Length: 211
Image (cartoon, rainbow, N blue to C red):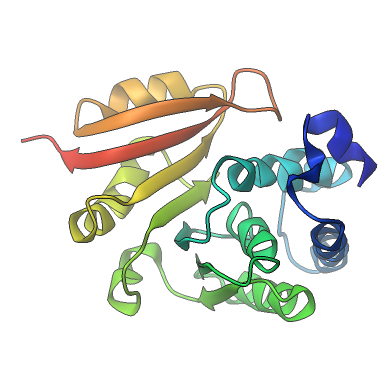
């Protein structure tokens, strides 16, 4: 994918086969977008930059074969991108939680056609914990405020204090971090996004509720 070379300084961190599977994914997004609203229509011409490559930053930062929970997966960003990349490792797994049945059907179709290491849970995020075993890492993108996301993630941090949390956040993320610190204790590493100046991928650990 030529566009990746202008986006990433090291586009060879995934194989040619994986780039091919990501192209299959992109084609399926365009096909299904005609009947269900997977992404904002105005971002469809920028599908690669705004969605796929933006999501791929997470695998670049965290390529280890972990067991992931992707909350509110929607069209699969970033969790399905991670799952496609994990296919070449033949290790790791992504649990895609998406309560919308039409979007869940789309996710299953992409998994079928790409061999992504993922399964789909068509339930609400709040109900997913009872269905899952130990989770190593959590991701979410364009789902909710940081304070709300911490509420969803906290039970998994209680189950596994070493759980790693990764959230894509936009230009207002600094304000969200400030507000979240009123209710939550956490360690934070900010990874500046290659997709948009001023946005970031937040790496969070040691999450707990303030007393």
